[in-house]
Length: 235
Image (cartoon, rainbow, N blue to C red; front, side, top):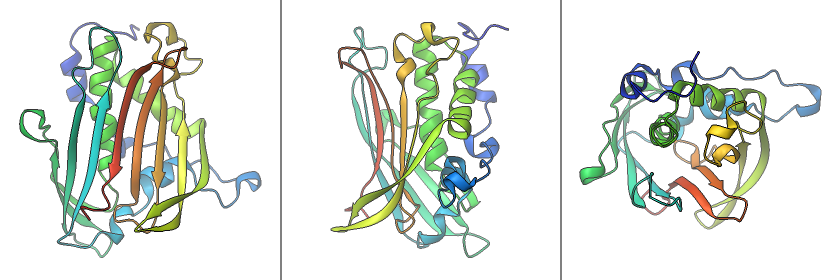
């Protein structure tokens, strides 16, 4: 099977299911990690929207930049992703309208009906994979499955403190490097060290505080930084 494809990329992308639809199942909590939630549970299985008030808007600041010569990721991009929250069919569910970027950068997304989870996780990862697969001339499903496996089998979940509204609140930090040691690492243009970091806080509307995908070369040069951050001021 050819893992890294050079054609029919758009067709493959169109066929991909959403991350949330086939997210990795939470690993069994053992005595050694009792009390620490599984990465997949935090990111895909929690009712993250229960604290998002109907009628409110959740705003995320987005950044993508790369130092790779020739600019395969395009010009640096700073924009926003907004979620317009409306009541769902159950107390924990919401109908969600999405505005993903602005102007010519706009990406079609949503709307989502009767969602308990925050769709911004899947939206970020799928947008990230579209760009990464194009740059690497890779099969995006292969990359996606590697990330899923990393979150299921190779993620570190640690408690963290996050400053929200001028005070420190408890949250969780999830980190995974899914391409380290991958058999196709040599085809990834030095980005096999790609690190995915997620920060969640239960008291924040939608629970997602930040998502980051980053890769650096051995000299510390930035191959890719892509980040989504909860905008506290936008509220």
